[in-house]
Image (cartoon, rainbow, N blue to C red; front, side, top):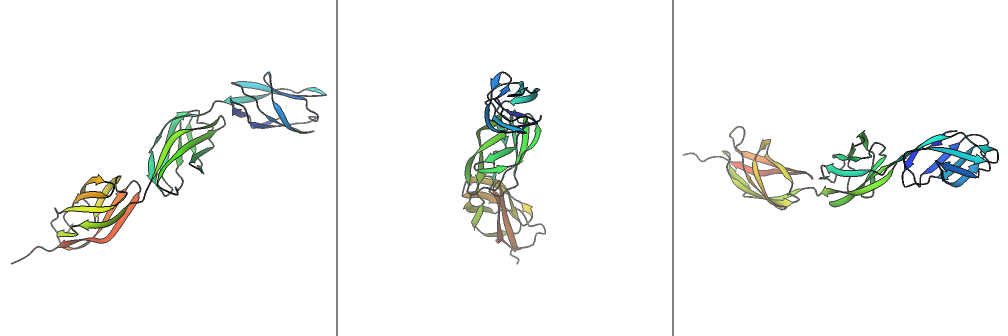
Length: 250
C-alpha cells in the first residue's frame, strides 16, 4: 500500500494518494493520531488531504474490513531563504543565481515573478537556478517551492540592456589619453569599456553617463575604432564609434 507523495508540508494541505486493495468504503485515514480529509475513494485507492503535523507519522486506512498496516509520511518544514547572489542580471535568460537558506533539499521550482524555473539542489542549505528571461527591467519577487511549501521574501532585479548614443569628443590621437564622455542608457552597472579590443579606464558618472580615457591603439596607427560598453545588463556596441587621428608631421 504505497503513498504518493510520501512527504508534505507541516502545515498540511498536501494531496496524498494511497493505493492498495480492499480500500472501498474507507471511513478514516489517520496521519499519526490526526484524521485526514478523504476526497476520493475506490476499491484500490484513497485520496486524502494531509492534516498539519511534524516529523514522521504512520498513515493507516480504516474500512469496514479493519485497519491497514501503517506507512510512513514525512512532514517537511517550509523553506527559509536567507540570500541570493547575484541579486540582479540581464533581461535575457542565462544568469546563474545561487540561493542560500534552509529546507531547500526538496525544492521543485523557483519563481521569478510569475515565471517558474527549475532549480538544481546542492544541499539542504543551497540551490542554484538559471534566471528566466524577464519582460521588463525592474525587481521581481523570488519564490522557492518545496515539499514543505513555498517561501518568498527575496528580490531579483532585471537590468535594462545598455545603449550608447554619443561619444564626446568622438575622435582623438592614436596615442590615446583623450577624455571622452559616453552618453547612453542603463550604464550604472558598467563593467568594462573597450576601444577595439583594448580596455579603457572608465568611471561611471550616472545611469546615462560614463567618463573614459581612450587607450593607445595597439599598433600606434590611426583609424576608426569600435566602442563596446559591457554592463551587468548586457552589451552596447557602437561600430566605428571613435576615430583615432594621425599625428601631424612637418
